[in-house]
Image (cartoon, rainbow, N blue to C red; front, side, top):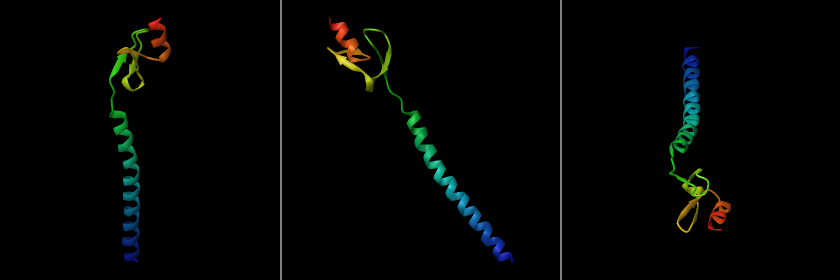
Length: 74
């Protein structure tokens, strides 16, 4: 009887430990993604701030979209 209780307790702790480990890995990955920052640049045409990864460069000038780059060149 006591052996079953000890075994049941060990199994419950093992399952809880595995669940905690499983869910904490996903949380760490999402936290790292939130912590990654990116420099912002201002569009020369409209003044909107845009992440550098989405920036359109035309004649070494930053624009938020290709339309603004084209309209500023005209």
